[in-house]
Amino acid sequence: MTPSLIHKHILLGVTGSIAAYKSADIVRRLREAGAIVRVIMTENAKRFITPLTMQAVSGHPIHEDLFDVRAEAAMGHIELARWADVIVVAPATADFMARLANGNANDLLTTLCLATRAPIALAPAMNQAMWQHVLTQDTLQVLKQKGIYFFEPDEGSQACGDVGPGRMMEPVEIVKKVSQLFVTGMLAGKKILITAGPTHEAIDPVRYMTNASSGKMGYALAQAAFEAGAEVSLISGPVHLAVLPHVTCFSVVSAQEMYAAVMKIVTHYDIFLAVAAVADYRCQHVLKQKLHKEEEQTQLQLERNPDIITAVGKLTKRPLIVGFAAETEDVIPRAKQKRKQKNMDLIVANCVGEGMGMNSDDNEVTVIGANFEKMLPRMSKQQLARALIEMIAKF
Ligand code: PMT
Image (cartoon, rainbow, N blue to C red; front, side, top):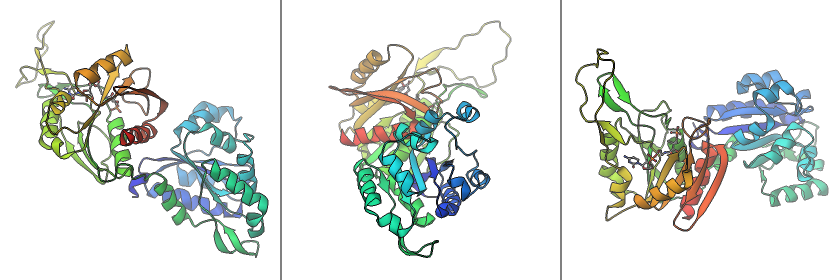
């Protein structure tokens, strides 16, 4: 697996070129590298490769029509634009490049390119004379200036019999280039410790108290920190997520275990990122035997768990501390108060509820420091993690 492609959402656009037969191979290789791929085909692309082939290799229905009511009901075009971590158009024809440079939104693919915040990369494929034409070269420059990435075509013999530049880059190289888009090096040389997931606080041998944290936000941050070049350690509560290669992971169950695991190693790190939803209380007496329902009512005596961030904040050799605050009301004032109380450098205020924040794929947060406040709108946790890691690196 290519570490930087794991769990990445890749939207592959296929336009009408003979090189479209290679798009199936691109999908296969992206999936082998750990990515989740959805495919959009233009009308002309379907003349070269069937939607059925692309559906079979991607494992998802093909997106093809801006006005398809059924497709919009399943995953609308704006949702798809938000879903993407990157849009790769391979092959990209001269016509597609020109329409994109012109700001057109006259089919699903161009519309998505305008609607997304994700990076866009094009792998052009066309006849060598078309590629070298001054209009195509001008379009190339316009798109590059607008921040579009290009996987430029190779030279060689072409399907039409010509020889020259215009052959789409080989799938194996395209996949490498896509993975490089996610590698930034912004935290190169830094060590980062992250907590993620919930904790379980035992009541008796078979029951425990917990919360709805899935670990997705913390794991996405660990992945983004790794892609930014950091050495990453993750202390994770019980979650159902795949292990991240290249991240050192320590599994814990309770808040006390998480506290002990953090305090043992935190002084070796430059940054401490506390994403875990740690239980504030635990049972004072964990029952040795299963609690039976003999009484109509029962009571559990709870006592406070140690606060991990507060303890880290008191260390003389203290890392940069970034905490999270999951709140359902008065989100910003409460987060500000927590930041000060717990001596954090930054806090990420997280409104939870209504399908967002906890145990969801998307999140929307406000990052708060001593003198600033920046809102990051709703996006996938992977996208948000990259934005947060960039902010932390700059901070
Ligand atoms: O896991 P997901 O489903 O992806 O959801 C992500 C999330 C919503 C859990 C995450 O984004 C988030 O907001 N985490 C913080 C959860 C929270 O409610 O924290 P808190 O307000 O209880 O605590 C504030 C900060 O202190 C947190 O950084 C927390 O890790 C830390 N803390 C809390 C208690 C404790 N005993 N020790 C701590 O260090």
